[in-house]
Length: 169
Image (cartoon, one colour):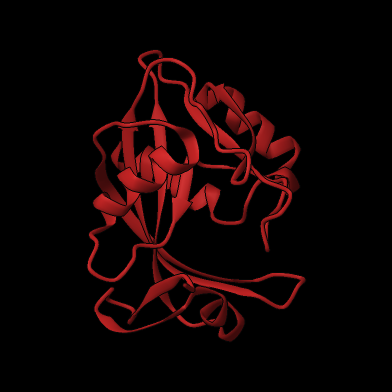
């Protein structure tokens, strides 16, 4: 069964559904989410995307990201995907959203209305190796320095998700 995602307009109102790969091939605006997990010392959990991802493979990014399925809320999907990707169960809350469009070298385009969710977790995750190559906990200060020194090591949307955390977290 193909992955079906929700197409939206610039106000996040649903306008239809489509196969995920087809939506990325056509660059159509769709609903997505980015999760940032923090621990009690304020460190942020990053994941390194698996090498088999069809875009942004091997890059560092937020704790989890994906697309809601038709009939699921962003938070419901976020909780499901966070457990599937990172083995973490926790409450999530939305702290903001942003819209972006980015074309990748392989011809695919991410055009997303991205909801930013946060949650807290103590201890190490249990990442799914199909989704996640590696993970690390990092302080906001160290992360900012690393992103300035090596921006090409991070996904395009990650800085936008972090901005929502800085503004609303």
